[in-house]
Image (cartoon, rainbow, N blue to C red; front, side, top):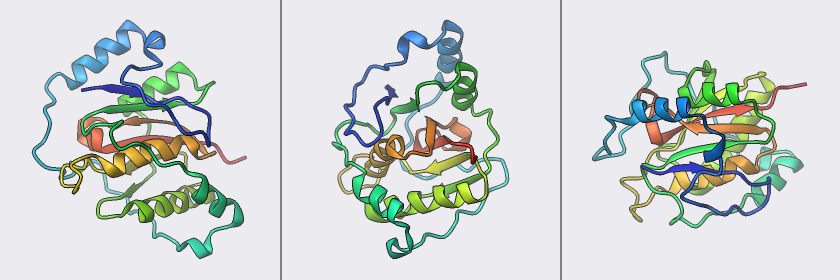
Length: 203
């Protein structure tokens, strides 16, 4: 299992690496916690979602691109597309903008932030998923929601046999101006098939 740390300026095409850029900032305590959490995890034979024991929150409906503001249409067109070879099915993802406190990062990784809403992308095409994410984040801002989960799946059943949506979502989110950080979920919340996401506070 590879631990990805995605860290690049928004709207720039990212360079992926198999070695975490945050490796030197992670305490031994956190590294041991992570090892203990995933010690018994084994790859699943399918991409069936593991539902959270918490009450499931309903995803918000998608709006067609024609309903987006000029800013959102610009964001839609500027999202870069990744090399699908960069990320694998069971890779653990992590990203945080500069200035995010280590305490907040730890809570994010451990799934200790209370998720307020979620978006399930199972069955979506890449184009549909991009529009859905933009619209979902817009709706979360309107409702002053900061902690969300995005379920992208693992991609075991994709035609390319690679995690297509997972890879695209991992590249798109850092390019969104309202995304502060994200991390792969705990096994009970979808594991490497889902992301916990922190959004900017509404001012």
